[in-house]
Length: 426
Image 1 (tube, helix red, strand yellow):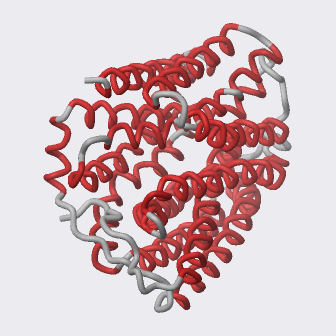
Image 2 (cartoon, one colour):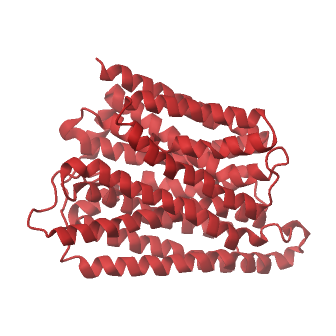
Image 3 (cartoon, helix red, strand yellow):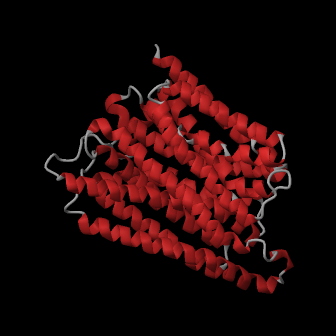
């Protein structure tokens, strides 16, 4: 049984540089699309919350359904890609994503919340397959010494997607989020109302499905002319045994809480910025401000790439984690502009966390690196668990109080950064 493919060897030397260059840019485009599709969840949450009169815990099931795909699909995705290769794996991921996007149509037509959750899970399953294939593929293309640079560059375009999609999505999805209160509508008329409102979402995801199908067709057409290195199998139990290593175990926990903290803040940010104690924005304006949160991560990656060449990665990670925790603390302890923008600024310091935690956790694994990569990929399920806990606490108290959970997550990341910096000297 396998977990995730590894860039165990570069693309064949006989592959033309033109073909490799084409594939790099195509894969970068895939990074952009899946980043945008993921960040649309943050705009979808306030829409569904109002449409179905959900609590924060209930609406966080959207993130639970989405990120559970990482825990469930990573292993079979790795098995499939080990057999069919990276490029065909990308086609498979794009097709599954397109199917998930199309499922928003019947979900909207039925006006049932559970239908949206199913669509999100299938969409995320496709993204999981893409992640398992795309990350090692782009790292394996070209000079091995430039692998980190190519991956960081691709992740920057992923962040570009997370920056642009919420802004556009907020204009299209949240324009009518507060126009009619479902509580004022007669029960007999609710299904028709939800169907009509859900159609707005369905149209957007239908457009995404069309784009995904076109990109999948391009990959399929070029599959025989592009380098398609087939990775080797990776044992699942070998991966589990790596948890006996403190550095790997700590890294898995750190990545789990990082994704959980980032998604928790992103998911609640629209509602948080609508609070009279913060920026008191309407839903659409608050949705547009999500672009600043995710855009900060994009900018921070370029800055972080420069800093990581000059500062110990562990120390820099600890510094960014401590700053993120401090910004959340300032936000919940203040009011108005300071409160709103300090929370938005957390995105800037989220920037380096994923790649830095990932690389630090794998440091020194040598031939065991593929198994470690599989464990870290599965740790992304933190995006399912932590937001659900945060939403439950928001229901029991306030959104501000619930932000103590992301603070705790960032403090764990600080501890991992200091641990990694200390063990690097041993």
